[in-house]
Amino acid sequence: MNKGKLLQVGPPTEVYLKPNSIFVATFIGAPEMNLLEVSVKEKDDSIILEGEGFEIPLSRDFKELLERYIDKTVVFGIRPEHMTIEGISSLEHVKRSTTIEGTVDFIEALGTDTIVHANIGSGQIIKVKLPGHIPLEVGSKVKIVIDLDNIHVFDKDTEKAII
Image (cartoon, helix red, strand yellow):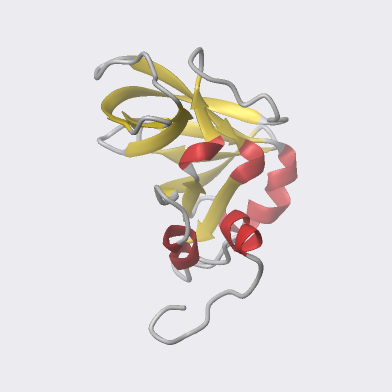
């Protein structure tokens, strides 16, 4: 609910995994979903989400969903727990993934979990939630693994979910 308006109805897990808008995506979950403005580009019959200093290549099956957004800006979303850092932790159940490079900017050691804040280009920070204590230091170069089956893409103007 936002300003008295009901935005999405469903079981909590469904709302968490499939938010229908940016507001819902950031309202539920802690830490909240990472949101980054990206341009949708077409390359070799595939789609790339291009941000400042990073690219997220997507497989062909995303093309139909994003075709009308080619050469437009959208909002890419990924929850901190739907990523990991290569060599530190794994996403064993993940079928499709890609990596982006970053530099550790800040580490939140929470005991049972650690949240790594990584700069992925032009000062853009992405949060990665990992189990336990993580042997990283501020300034470390990392490869962030993104679970492509758990990405979200929102229309920048309407803030409604595309994926």
